[in-house]
Figure 1 (tube, rainbow, N blue to C red):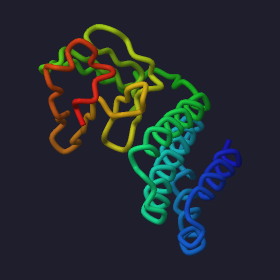
Figure 2: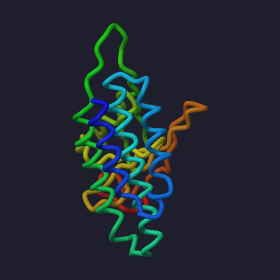
Figure 3: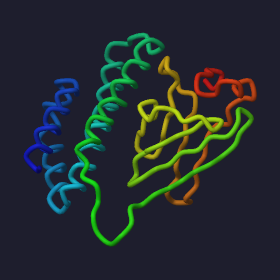
Length: 189
């Protein structure tokens, strides 16, 4: 598992611009190996998922800054690609076994656009509903301590932030105009 994890991490480093990669690649690999050393198979899988996701986000930002592409058209496609990559990599995660329970957060809230729920298991979003209708989990992008829910077009329709120090979850309330179709409403932007 460790060699596969290292191969995936090395492959994801190729997403970074070459100048940045040449300067920091060895140091990043050393840090990754150190973080992987004391983890179980499941912990390694979760580490790889998080690292690949973070590298993809950094690479996208760096490349967009370099090329000054039209963000309006590029970001939805990239967000979808990142979401699909995270979903594909999450299949490598081995279910936890043992006497202790998995860490789970079930969050339910309401704003002018209606009710929404979010379930997080072991730090990863596993289900979401808007106005009691489930959404495909592929439309949820987990970035560090924030979660973005995307419309089919790739636009962000809901962004949640988790503040570990206070244990709070916050979001910008969606407008009432989004009540009829909150999963596709772009008035949030």
